[in-house]
Image (cartoon, rainbow, N blue to C red):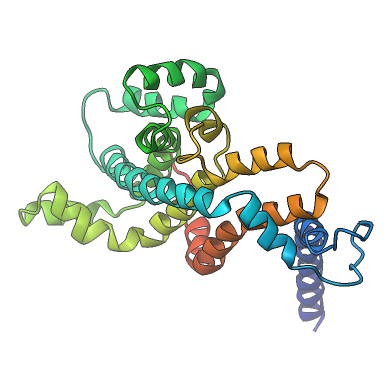
Length: 277
């Protein structure tokens, strides 16, 4: 009986801590959401509900900030970056996690440099290199650097998963004449679905929210993305607090939708994605 009571108290304490941290994490978003609904003629007062809800702030921000075009650009970049980076990450992780070859360890550490090197230090030379090749202010000029930026993490993530693959199964398939492609696509990938889904969800969030690369490499209005456009909107409407909050919510909504749709696979992938050496 005492053990049951102890477990119940421990579970209740755990839930209380989780609720507390959830409230702390959600508080800024709730605050922005409430501010976005304030009429222009009412003073904003923290987390208090406005006297009347003004959803017109979203329509005004959408039209004034040209978020239709900005969201289209962000969607195009994200739709290209996520599958491309995921494909290369899966191939890299498969090679580094299951195969033995010369210079394997140095090459893997070379990939890991991307995790510790601040890309802000290379963005100016990168801009001039892209301009030299005619890729500045183009979709490829933004898609390729983002792919390279996330590839280090993707390689580490998928290598960690493939290191958990059962070697006897792989060796048995090799003895039956299965080649590397067959082993990857037919044997390993079905069990890697949660890890890949989690990785793709992270890439989606990172690519959609990418600000600095988009600000420097995609300055043309027809390729500018939503985060960079939001920065311009903030600079032009500093006194329109409700409009700024509405614009911030508009940019955030796609990320929330992706997480809600993929939350089960995301949690499963995180729970089973322990990094192994």
